Length: 99
Image 1 (tube, one colour):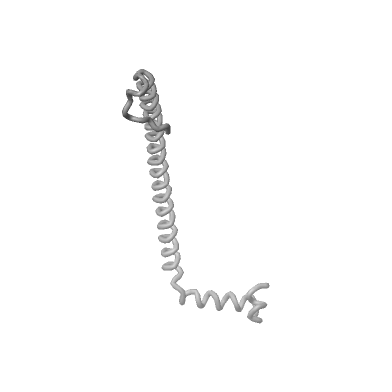
Image 2 (image 1 turned 120 degrees about the vertical axis):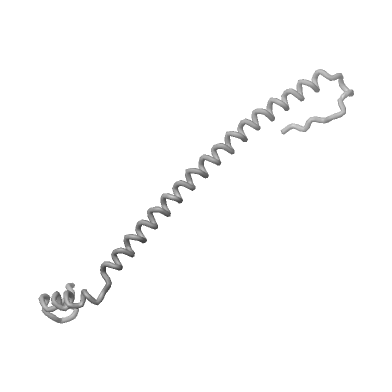
């Protein structure tokens, strides 16, 4: 349904009324505010993506460190088991608890 039918008037008359009332609304100001808001949203998403990328890098770094620590722990644990095997029975004072 077109506006002329809704308001029960002629299309040309409705167009004249719209043109006459356009000056009442700060169209340029609203357009500028919308553009500023759009820029702010784009900057916010860029910052958000940068934060996500930084967080992913940090989590990857933590994961690599944990993997390295796990390998080192396994090597130390194996060395302790080997050491325990070389000590005669009954002579060890420390007990090794498996991981």
